[in-house]
Length: 87
Image 1 (cartoon, rainbow, N blue to C red):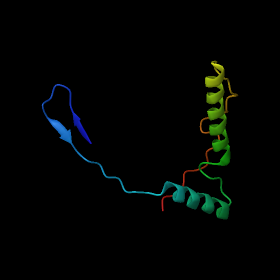
Image 2: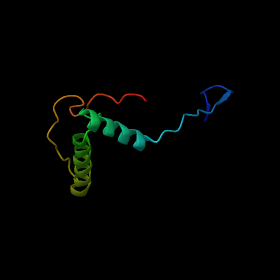
Image 3: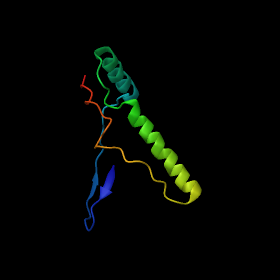
Image 4: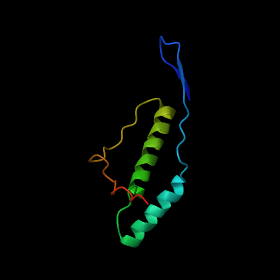
């Protein structure tokens, strides 16, 4: 990454390296542990379903040229389970 601060002749050139993770594998491991331990997953199917409803509403809005209203979901992170354990 390279950036120049406004009104400064100095350019900051730095590179950030983050460890690679297979997020799909980590999610599957978490889900498997939840099934084995009879716990609610952090990202359950209901959240994915809500995402799909939102995407469909966006498409309908674009197609019809009008806002599309959806029923509100009660509560912040209404479907979320506990965060996965680091491991």
